[in-house]
Length: 486
Ligand code: ADP
Image (cartoon, rainbow, N blue to C red; front, side, top):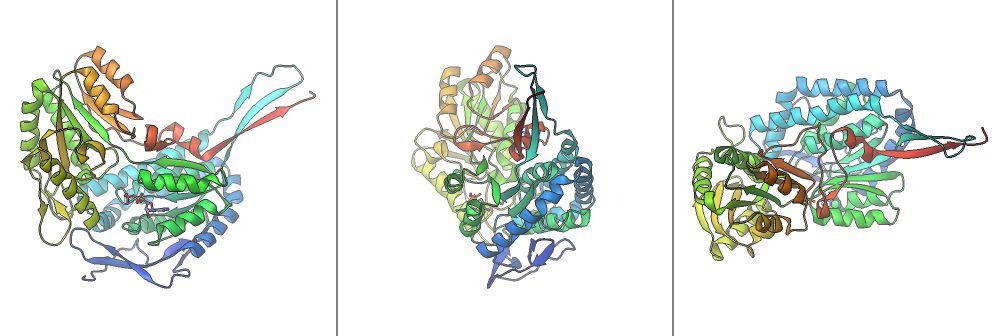
């Protein structure tokens, strides 16, 4: 592989512990690749458990002073961090596209979206209210105060290298927690850039630490078993979420988990078909289908099945696949060879069981891990696309007849993150919205993520919510104070 080092004033070739850029005790390095070209962008120190422990010690030492600051001081620092991200959005987006592959305009959108969480929680920092409770007897007074949980370990995935981090760190820092952050090994450069700006914004040494390394299990184990860490916040696969929850059981450590999804996307006969197609494009093909809220199973009612399929296929065919830095590209590469292999496997499994390709269906030969955006018809239960998250630009279209039938099929999964449906009749809208067993439901829209709303899942899609005023709850403890003998 060719070395084409990526340069930016916001990059360092090290981790960040206690306010210092350091290679720690790493004895080897790991490479960060550009998935569009296969080139090596950077070689970073492969940090492990020992450096994680040091970062935890630093976070633990820094936490009391950080929590003791007036909320408006923490707020002002976070606000400055937000301003720096916005001012440098182009640079940050370039780092993101280089290491992750999403088209540059989408990467820029992610940077602004990531920054919005910091802005939001800079504001919420000042609004951590307690409660007074009427006492059952006159000689008592009862009060609830909210306090930070303490040191938080965050583990995040590669599909949103910036936003998945700020969603966790912004509320944590806002309420007085300190953080040890482990970004995905595929996309650590965005995390490094965030830390560079955090330092410039005046976030004190030890408050935000970044461990870069390839050995997720070793770093994760230290975070889960070190008793100075009070909480783990994880976004990633359900499989790894389960491991982390198990590891946290020994110390009854708190966990927030944003795990896999298997989103149904339902189009009823009375839907606005053009809006439904637009929604499907946004929900299915954003980030080349690599988001946990991407439509995974598209259910289309019989009366509009053929018309919807034709309209969707026409739009999908017009998409432009390529390097995210090229103008006009709307679909970048998949993250790596493994991701590409999974998408290929899901498509060939569906075809072998009777599905048909309306458009796409193939990998693109050459450097980079590209797959043509695909629409499949004649899809049925029993195919992998019906059960597993494909995490790629493939829309499988299932046909259905009745409302009851589609609700049953939509809920027939262990996942419960996002669901979408398009319909006209108000009665049906309420009925379906209430019946879907999901943490989030998009109604007549394919896009619903925003820092102002609570993001999270039910069932095996996770615990906790990120964003909105509720997002701070995951980082706060309630303490009940009872004053007696008055
Ligand atoms: P994805 O399929 O999106 O790569 P993963 O759940 O495998 O999702 O990875 C998400 C994050 O979890 C990454 O930062 C990865 O390094 C980390 N990770 C993977 N395995 C473990 C583990 N056993 N313990 C802790 N973290 C892990």
